[in-house]
Image 1: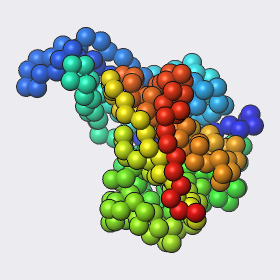
Image 2 (image 1 turned 90 degrees about the vertical axis):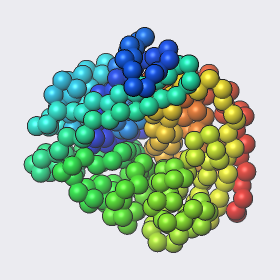
Image 3 (image 1 turned 180 degrees about the vertical axis):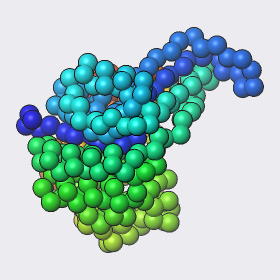
Image 4 (image 1 turned 135 degrees about the vertical axis):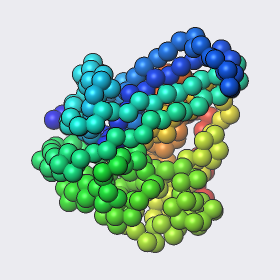
Length: 314
């Protein structure tokens, strides 16, 4: 495995279809102007970002049926390492509906396929043998039926045992993951409030840091303020306003990809606020595309130049 390689774990993969409509009319027959297809699921989006930036990366998870076959084709085409296991049940399909006149995006998601107990154990066994080869791990997304809340926790404990930097982008049933110890938790403001019962980001972050051995908390809020917390310091990041938003689907996964990549490079405390700004710029740029987690680096650079970083706790 190449030095600096990142592993994206996506237990809930999908095949994504994006349908573009000139003007969407509810309760009527709507014929799409165009259809785009690509792999979906948070970890798959993370992988896409990394490979387009030339970062060596692999993916692990479950794939099945026709959607799974298409996913494997995409992994091979982008030069990613494919550690996915075949599942008995087929990969789900997700549909992004874009209204080009109004600028809105609606996401329709099929039920997640159930993962069999033997499939879950096979993936855990694979990770026990292969995880030490990687420089960072990103756990992204919800768990499908069949995987209990301790599934991520066991993987987090394994990463900590081997000293591998770990980013978690999830918020439901993550107690065992937080207890195992994370390099970074990346969630949005609404998810943090749901997790802690506290609306104020600073108070919620402080409560989380007191309770768990968490090194970093990266908090997004769409076009609003970004927050970055270490155990001693806090930063606020003000994003520029964007026009011509097409679809926010996959934007958060762009941020997760950039942050995991920087963790794989042993990012310092001093550098992390700028890395988070970079992650937010890439996420913002992806909102200008109809395809999930795709962005033009030149657009991300322009946005990055306009992000204001302010340290509010030293």
